Length: 354
Image (cartoon, rainbow, N blue to C red; front, side):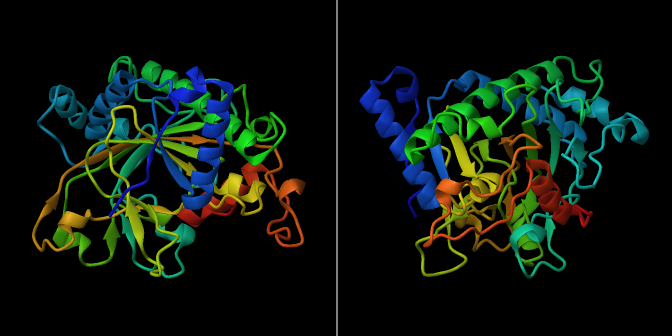
């Protein structure tokens, strides 16, 4: 089954005016078609992405209930697990409707509750660590101590800033591709302070026998909350986006990892609302890879990803823009702010009031 095409974003930096216009049209068409696209050659280098995954392996091996013995961080992993439980639990993500900050244990988040009607007894098999920028003082980030993981916070805050810049560049292309005035989408997002969120996901090895019970999945089909999501993944298969053109309602397209600078971009809920469903949020999941689906007693290897949620300003109206309200496309959503939509969505994850 073919994956989504790779789109070379270097044209945005180096191309002619005609090249840039064509790129904007391609990006807009791809996101309208699938709710997702694959970019290569953004300003985030392969070296930066690789270093980010080294930190993911380090931190999530520390936070995981499963220790690892390979890689350069194995000694630190063992050191972390010798810490008292209270110290490891010092930066938990609170399971409420606020922006997510800190560490979430396996099973803390249940993505099946977001977009699936039948979700009783279903569980996610992942853990994650979420943070924003130091400038977001309304919802401060939580961090392990510098002595536990030297350099981790600085690298991740720098990576968040890099993602923030690329996210705004993608929105700039969408403005052009949609025929909007410059700034009509970007003005709905905070330039300063940065309130976008960076998440490190870790999926421990898991048996196909457990997954085949139908009660567990690494992540159930769901959509994200912000304007767009930028996602980097490792070589472990399993990430999929909904196939909107299949006759089967549960058909998904595998998203391969084929290029060292590759970045997946999803349309998220706030952009779906703002464009009045002209751009629909990309439904995605992390499932059993195709080549493992008929294996009765296999083990899926560990999997890692890094996601950046490009957020609207908390007080910005993310209700439909007038340009997208027509007799053929009547207003589908009431006006609400970015933080109100976030609280409705994340509240579903935890059964918390929005």
